[in-house]
Length: 282
Image (cartoon, rainbow, N blue to C red; front, side):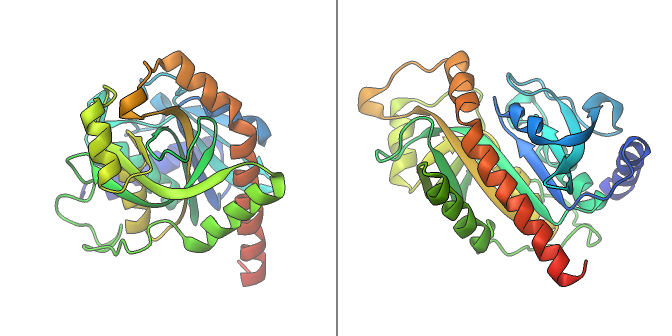
């Protein structure tokens, strides 16, 4: 971790050269959710390969670029695509962009993902606000010598997802009249989908949905002192006794169909962040 501080300086300098504004919100878009960038104005798109020390996104449905612009008049930086452990990257590299967004100036990280539903009360196309998570990725992005300039050695994880942001997002769902749940996300390494026995195990230990991302980024966000809102789009159901074959094409199609719900929550969160900054005089 000790080498990341100087690497972040180089990364942010390259971003600021093309987009010199200071964002207050960072957004990570998961598989099939890239269309949210259509709500931005005055955009500047920066491919990951042009940013020093950024890894390349190779997953389906991930464009692999930063989209910088304004949403509700608020400067934001959107990661259109993320990196995953199953692509062969260490967790410190997967989460490096989160640290870059923090260095650029964000105070709020909105992280989204496509996931499989484990809770029998959930249905495909619905939204789940992440209330807590379980890390089964056999790693942690904070392993190694800690750099106090980036965060504390032992960050508290009693509430990694900011409670008032979850409450507000649930309120948006009620106002817009769509189903939103509040539950637990479990992260596994992938890339294969799970077996029937594994789905039973994950449900038994308290997970409502399962995915292959998000948790490393949230750990680093908490380490960095950011407020976090986590949003999962349920793209397939993982009921072991009635399991259907899942395909990438079907998962991406369901994710894209849920974009209006996702966009409503993200837009409201950005608007609330702007109001909070105005009231604080920032």
